[in-house]
Length: 78
Image (cartoon, rainbow, N blue to C red):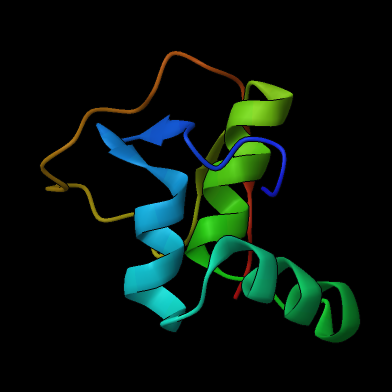
């Protein structure tokens, strides 16, 4: 994240997602994550980009407005 803060996820730079979600700068957020290791949506988006996979979190709603992505899917239980 620190090396690619301008990476766009859904047409928005990663640095903006981090600021909105945590109120922190990218450097502050990365430092905190290095200690706590607990992630969420931002980390899932980064992993999806890095590994070229999509995440599907149950329950899988049949009427979900977005079609399944064309990438390999990792099923994440929460």
